[in-house]
Length: 216
Image 1 (tube, rainbow, N blue to C red):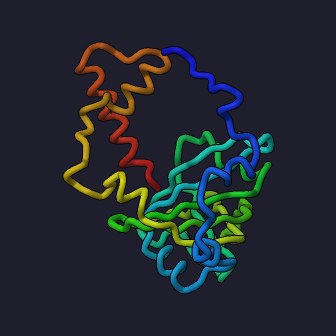
Image 2 (tube, rainbow, N blue to C red; image 1 turned 45 degrees about the vertical axis):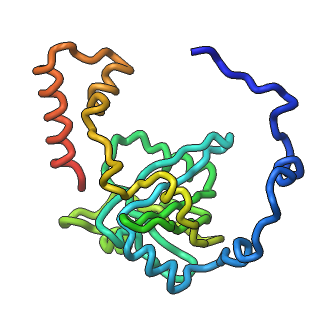
C-alpha cells in the first residue's frame, strides 16, 4: 500500500482556517457544557457499564483504553469527582503511566441501546486508598489501584455517530468469524500463528479460560 502524503496547501494548520470551513456553533452546543456532575450526568454514569478513557503522555502521544464492568462501576464521589476502578489486565499500564506524567483525561460513557453519550473531561490521579478501593470490590476482590478524576467539563453528546453506525442494531451485527480470533491476530503480528487449526483452537480456548479466571 502506497504511503499517502497530503499536499501542504491542503492541510489545515490553524484554528481560524478550520473554523472557516464550518458554520458557527449553535449556542446551545456551547451552553450545554457543565462544570460539575449534575443529576443527569450522575444518572447516566450510574447506568453505564462501559467507557473509553483517553490519556496522553508527557510528549502528547495519545492513547484510548476501554473500561468495562457492571453498570454503575464508576463511582461518583461528589459533584466534581468520580473514581474508576482499574481491573486486572495485561499490565502494559499504558493509561496509568500516561496519567502519572500528564493528568489530563477524557472519558466517553456509553449505555447499551442509548444513541447519545456522556463526555467528561478532567484531571486524573492514581489512588491506593484501601477504604476507597474496598467500595469498588467485585466478587470480593478490590482493585489494586483506582483512577480519581476531578471533573472540569461535562456534556451530553448527540446521537448522530451511533445513528450513522447503527452500532446497537442487531441486524447490523457482524459474525466474529469474519476475522481471525484475537489470539490468531496477535500471534500473526508477532511470532507467527500456527497453521494447524487444532493447535490454534487450543490457544483460543486457553485465552477464554484466562478470561474466566482473571476478570477480577
